[in-house]
Length: 193
Ligand SMILES: C[S@@+](CC[C@H](N)C(=O)[O-])C[C@H]1O[C@@H](n2cnc3c(N)ncnc32)[C@H](O)[C@@H]1O
Image (tube, rainbow, N blue to C red; front, side, top):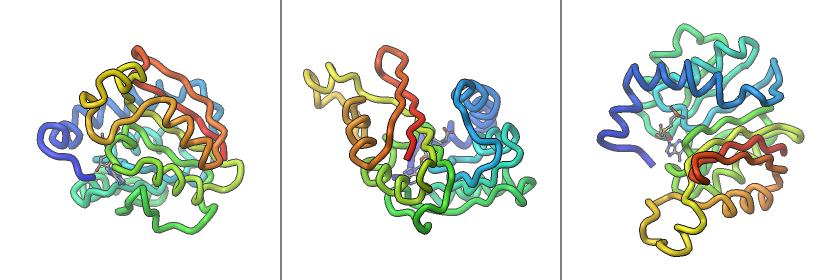
């Protein structure tokens, strides 16, 4: 789903690009055992700040950076043009990926799943396009389980709980290694296919 208003403005801003490039990327996966060389699919790349951080951090990665929103694809394309040999930017819907089976070594989706609508379909699609043994790096906000039970109407559209994402990862065939933070309202996972 395309974002609107303030959220889209923030996502397109130089400040957000700097934040994702300099803070999110270096900290989020600092302790993960990631390959130095990999064919990487990024889902929901937004304006490309995060992609730039990943490409700078892993100089041998070949990244296909994708987003559903044509405006974001255009912004990311401009930002990442100087990395054209290593990064290509394409429009793709995470729930219906235009890529063949087992094409990628690694997939990355940061703060994207609660935006895509059918995030279970996106999880299954990522599993399809990853090679056996490939990895999915996922981070997102979640609704605390107690809140989903007691006040289900307060949950913003598209959001989900940790048990739900754990179940969906396992059902798609992933072996998830989940870490949570911020009072159970956020998680990151490195899941193996
Ligand atoms: C909150 S932004 C995160 C962007 C970037 N990962 C970051 O953290 O800076 C969510 C992004 O997901 C994209 N998106 C929403 N639905 C999508 C879908 N079905 N497939 C791919 N991208 C989608 C939006 O256009 C937006 O750029």
